[in-house]
Image (cartoon, rainbow, N blue to C red; front, side, top):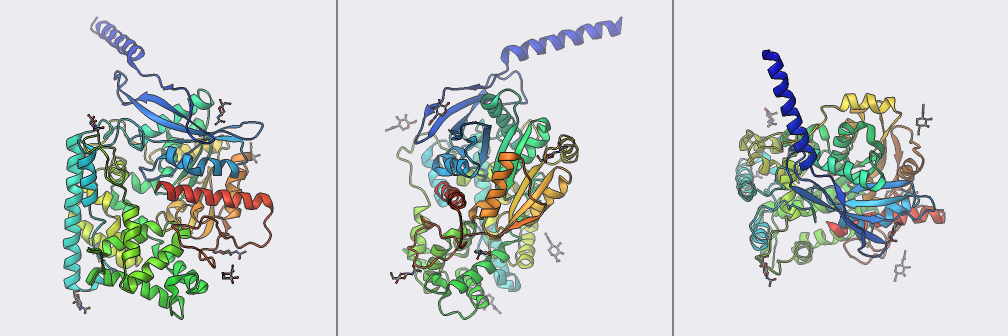
Length: 577
Ligand SMILES: *[C@@H]1O[C@H](CO)[C@@H](O)[C@H](O)[C@H]1NC(C)=O
Ligand SMILES: *[C@@H]1O[C@H](CO)[C@@H](O)[C@H](O)[C@H]1NC(C)=O
Ligand SMILES: *[C@@H]1O[C@H](CO)[C@@H](O)[C@H](O)[C@H]1NC(C)=O
Ligand SMILES: *[C@@H]1O[C@H](CO)[C@@H](O)[C@H](O)[C@H]1NC(C)=O
Ligand SMILES: *[C@@H]1O[C@H](CO)[C@@H](O)[C@H](O)[C@H]1NC(C)=O
Ligand SMILES: *[C@@H]1O[C@H](CO)[C@@H](O)[C@H](O)[C@H]1NC(C)=O
Ligand SMILES: *[C@@H]1O[C@H](CO)[C@@H](O)[C@H](O)[C@H]1NC(C)=O
């Protein structure tokens, strides 16, 4: 009798929760598409805010933009994600990446940009302040990073100064973490990768039919969503390209595991800069100056950091500290087509005139909100730290002294001068507490099973990476390749630049195109050189040249169209940076 009662109770409880589920669960719904720019249509997808709570009525909205297929026969959709986390896929596709990716992939797919949870126009906003004015003020006062240079760790006085600068930066990040927790936006604990990939599945359902497969080109942080998706929906894997790979295994742990990966290839990229600058000479690369070797250029480049640390050049009252210099160089080094400008700016700095450098920094800083009492917008520069943190394991028990020792060790071992500018997530997360979203990320916990399932279905992911990528080193891409031994291939692109597209290569672009169009795979480990001249002759300085220079001698018209389209993606990246 006792067990019978228990069964009845169990059944009624189950029925109650079923009926509650069917009446209350939010069914994703797509708004009508409306024109939103040349060749573009926009819509919004309404999805459940909290996938872990089937009884919740709350919703999130995900903005979408579509660049239509141009070929006679449409094969489906390719979703794209420009990374960050925090970069808007809608802005990216609208800024020309949609058309460019369409050209590269033969016009057979609709190219779809979306703003992931907590990003761009997605609602609710990942905002940490009560209004736009407070948010802007906080962002303007937020330091670029901690001051350091490589040699500082061999000098007791300077080592102390670095530790103190790291403490100041950590305090600023702690203030941000506290503000985010206090504001407690509905996006704060509902924007991790596990939520984003469920939204992606709903986008595919809405666009290509229920249960259709995902085709995806994810850049930089985009591979985190790709890796989460394939483990969550292994039966829905279409053609997936992971480009400029952020290490998903490290990302599932504390940021202390990610930091050692971040800048492994920075020294290679600096050597590439010095070599290409030396070969181009001072007429094309201003910083070449009177140097008679690439090694000399590299030494002068390193000396800039020492000067910025010890006796910063001041422009309009602003000292160009090593944290400002590092954050500028770390960002611009990801895109080699900006290097002619970078070389001119640092030549000015070396000569004691940082006015042009300051102008570029001020221009990219964004302007004050017109209405200070309008709601906060969830500025990307601030939200990116929180968005990464909720994807990481709790980091709150990591002591600051451990971080200081880690930075000292990595800076010297990797000969990177820029770790001071890379501390945002670690410092934020150290001060953020241990609460995480209700629906945990898979991380890489199902990667081995996923590899088997994909291999059984003859489904192969294409991993691509630059060999000297200063933000997502080849090592991280190779790590992912080894985690998917039977269901992935890797192809590489020569030279520096973050993601393969930042330094266009015809061979690599065609490889990606063939994969999307026919499923054809390159030989594992295939290598393709870049085709771009970094320091062209007679260039007019702008952030990046409007017309790229390629070094091949016999491109067909269609090859040239692919290269120009690849460069169009670079310009879109720059436009949304
Ligand atoms: C894209 O295709 C859809 C469906 O055919 C059509 O309704 C829409 O007008 C097209 N958009 C543009 C910008 O051409
Ligand atoms: C150590 O750092 C201090 C402060 O920057 C500097 O004055 C001193 O010359 C450095 N010592 C050496 C040996 O470089
Ligand atoms: C500024 O934003 C507030 C809050 O949204 C709003 O009430 C007010 O009308 C806005 N002022 C102007 C001039 O738009
Ligand atoms: C830094 O390097 C020292 C010496 O090799 C080592 O003892 C220490 O554990 C390292 N600390 C961190 C945080 O990596
Ligand atoms: C697996 O896919 C590849 C690439 O699409 C194709 O060449 C091959 O024939 C497929 N093999 C099987 C057994 O279906
Ligand atoms: C073009 O330049 C890149 C580096 O910028 C180099 O790796 C590649 O070999 C060059 N290609 C040709 C055909 O010269
Ligand atoms: C560069 O500009 C100069 C002067 O305008 C011109 O004489 C020269 O031919 C140009 N060189 C190239 C490679 O375009």
